[in-house]
Image 1 (cartoon, one colour):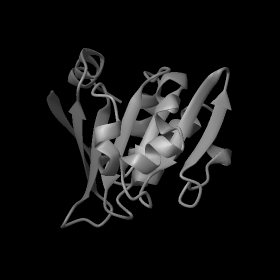
Image 2 (image 1 turned 90 degrees about the horizontal axis):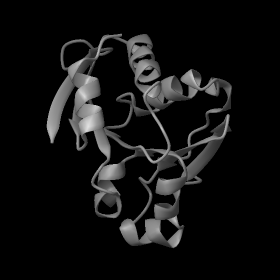
Image 3 (image 1 turned 90 degrees about the vertical axis):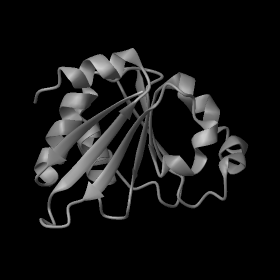
Image 4 (image 1 turned 180 degrees about the vertical axis):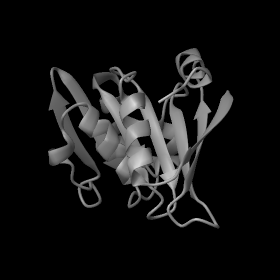
Length: 155
């Protein structure tokens, strides 16, 4: 497991970072997005969707648990599991079946981490105490693909 960090000075930075990152995404990639409310998880997701030309289709999955997007035979699943009691509820909705069928972005994924395959990537969004627009993105990788990518990351 490797750790990386990205400093975002504003929402635009977060979206640009996500767009660059999205260029590497492929079926079966699982990204856990964690951090307090208003820390940038949804802005990051907007950046990923904009890379795929889907920025006008984003809606928060807060009440539906998962929103599905499709572009050029690529499925993108955006989960918000905040309201789930535990991972058993994730299994009840067939959550694990999504992992093999597309790219999974899971907000609050730490709540169901025992249901998520080990090869996931986790990004924790932290607010900066000095500048209210700055976010520190702490990135934990569990695969060589992501280690190589972030070691050489430039945007």
